[in-house]
Length: 435
Image (cartoon, rainbow, N blue to C red; front, top):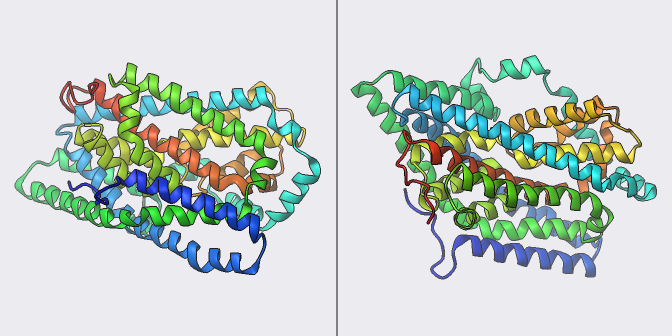
């Protein structure tokens, strides 16, 4: 598999970091000097905004064939049902454990720091007014969401073509998993040709994505310019306690929990893991999309972390939707923060319920920017907080979305290391040994 093309002097993650700094500084300067000038809105709406969207659309255009081909080949390469069962059960176990730890950590911090108790009511009223339309749209989307039974049944698609066309990733993944199992059960010359063809689709898709990734530094600069030119640093100061709580929980989970996981379960030194994962982490932070980062994660897992290919493809493809530790932390902290602000004291049982729903919500949340907000609105309604209160945090959601997506993607890679480290059937015993 070809590496993503980079400039001769600078690796891709350094180019993206440079784009991040340029966009951040440029946006802050424009916000401080031009403020609400009409030309700022014109630039963000018709220049930098479309450039960033073009980049994301090109990636999303290729995500569906990538997800299908990567998961089918990952399952088919397991060779037999026993190996698939081992990898699948270990993936599920580590996903549930890490998700549970993440939510518990977030709830602990938000109860200790209590950021919702210190928000100025006048400022909160202003934020709610500014985000009224956005909050209403999110609440409407949450009300249109299917119930628990419908969600479970919806994982099994009645029409896989419709599932792909509507970006129903869970349903598509179910079909790809079933299709891969079929290839494992039916071994013949014809199915081998079919498997080779699907792997060819994967190689073509990864090659095309490699060209798209060349636009990443420019897109990153545009994303950060839009964020800081419109909101500036003022919105960050206003909700500083809330943001510190969320980002603090994310950092603790990233540095401590993942380090222990890859070391104890995967046999890899944490520094080696983070050094090998840095390109995927930067891409995730920049795009705020686990799905858009999937091709980079697959390449990093195979080329940098040296994971068995079939394990990496299976775990990372599943994890792009099913393993959302950062999202679970964000949802838990946000719900308790808003409950504190509105004076709604939640009992231990209610907080445990929030924890459970956040774990399940993290598994089912779409791996796209802002995909967790409707889930937060649903949980708010469950605990007696007005769902429109989500408007309080919309101003800083883009930045927090970038942070939690970076944790989500790093968690996918960590689980892949943890699964491969103990899976002697999926790869060699030294596949993830310390480097």
